[in-house]
Image 1 (cartoon, rainbow over the protein chains, first blue to last red):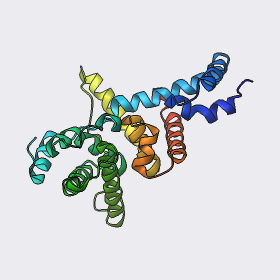
Image 2: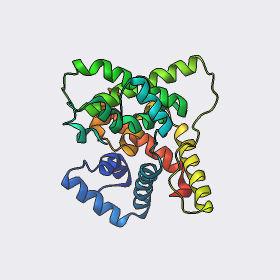
Image 3: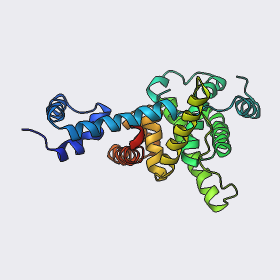
Image 4: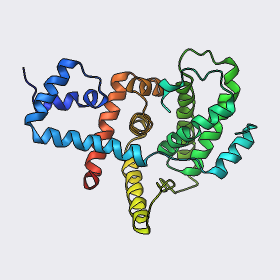
Length: 76
Length: 174
């Protein structure tokens, strides 16, 4: 059995989360080895996550952190 | 910090919980509400509720998941209140820019962060929340489902929708 592009597309969320079975991972790897389009899509999806991991986290400004901690009666 | 890393913190003092989760709730709040001042309100209201409820917290799950759930509900409340009373038209201001090594790098970082914010603001609120929790904050899909109070398959669907929409919108950066 081999996967089509649609099969892989349906499996991508689990594949990206690493929650596929060993058999599914093998089938996906076999398809990706021969399909440039799906490989490019997978790489782009991984890049989206990487971009947001690196640049999407916010830091509560120090002044606000102190103000909120003070209002809550907690010492940092 | 992911939910799984917080299993043992139920006995930690509130100051420690605040230090560990303030940025995470601020990020979640900002990504849902789209305004840094309102995101600060989300942090404050979340921890008011955490302080009130902590004595009765049953410990039937990681405390991180519990705090994220409170934060998420608080962000939704603030968002709904804002829709009813839109006093501040600003959305998705650029507030967090990674350290840059030159003026040019600083400008590029600003541009990138601004573009990432814009792309996220195009997503629906539930989709944005799932993506923030999973792909920015690193929770597992099962944890995301618990925080959002949806099935795991619904969480997966939201994540897939977010990633695909962002992939299309951010093509030039990938």
